[in-house]
Length: 481
Image 1 (cartoon, helix red, strand yellow):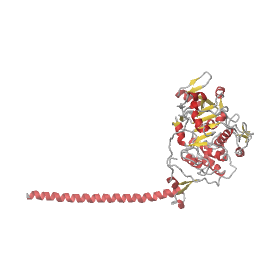
Image 2 (cartoon, helix red, strand yellow; image 1 turned 135 degrees about the vertical axis):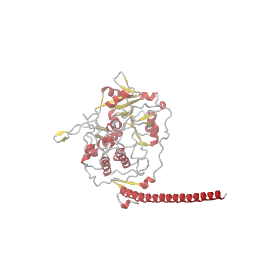
Image 3 (cartoon, one colour; image 1 turned 90 degrees about the horizontal axis):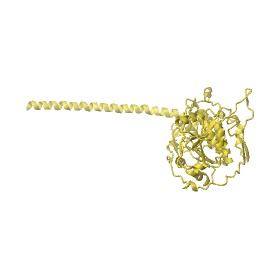
Image 4 (cartoon, helix red, strand yellow; image 1 turned 90 degrees about the vertical axis):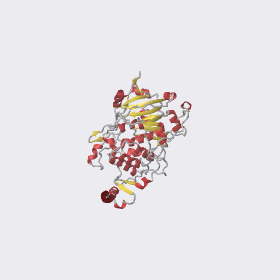
């Protein structure tokens, strides 16, 4: 018994010493973790402050909540107070039955612009002893651009389709569209999409509307291989409800810029049309087009309707988003924005008479009045002169028309209830469109981003001093933007 008790006692003492040793080891490890955490924090805090100082570019702005970068100002305090995320879809107060929609018997009168002509030839432009090549958009001078914004009852402006400038339609296609008064128009250039068949289209609308899909030759070959195309007895090609209209001799190097021709200049492509609905090829229309015209034009007497952008209101905010997403060469976007700022365009604010300066251009609904046609010409001229991002120039042209051009900008959630969005069959691969690798400064190396037949205003000396222009602060209204 005494021997057993001694053994138990020894085991107890050994266990006690072992527990004490484990406790000391745990304590040491715990202190080591705490010390490591403190060291990491001591390293991270200075690193964060250095990053903040670097991004602010100035010590005095370090704790002000405002960071100034190159040619822009980003207000973080405004980002924290961002507005609630807007609805993606909402109900549209449509008429019940397209068969009962009353189509206006009279066109809207042209009281402001009574006569509109289009320039077909430029004055002789000589460079280095030889005449320059014909351009689809023409060689518009800065003075001609300025004069085009001076509204009169009789006007003559650049509006694409200069003689020998390209963008031609076959005789068979032109003969077909001459009978079309109501249009739904889309376009595919560069094999980026396939036609999506509209749904919920009434028999009445199928007879009333011409559904036209403008395509280039590459897209025709792509559709012949990847879609069911049919030929009719008049030489026309069809994919479902869409009549394919081949646009030959494309005038621009970039598919996106070519796509602006049918999008903005529908009245020039199809001069006999009275009403048109443009829809991007990446969208599927899910509402009867006659109900769309009734809702957005005829019901309240509008002649032009376009949805507002979901997140952006200011052109400068949209330009900032285009630069961050590399939608075009960043310094060239800055050139366009500096010209607009120099010419007096203020950032959008609630005091403006327009709901927003930035539209969602995937759907455009319009009556082809002379004033609307003039607006489309002036809008296209900006796209032709500067970047092909048409959302950057829409609000500028509205501003230059001084409130004379009236339009209905409807909620973006209604736009998402009109059509369904699809992905492109492939991403845009043009380095100019993507702006990938574009330098940060306008030096000699940036000339590789120069297009040969579009955007030439970005490279033509501007008559004003843009060096002193400071772009407005960028306030990102929504986090998603």
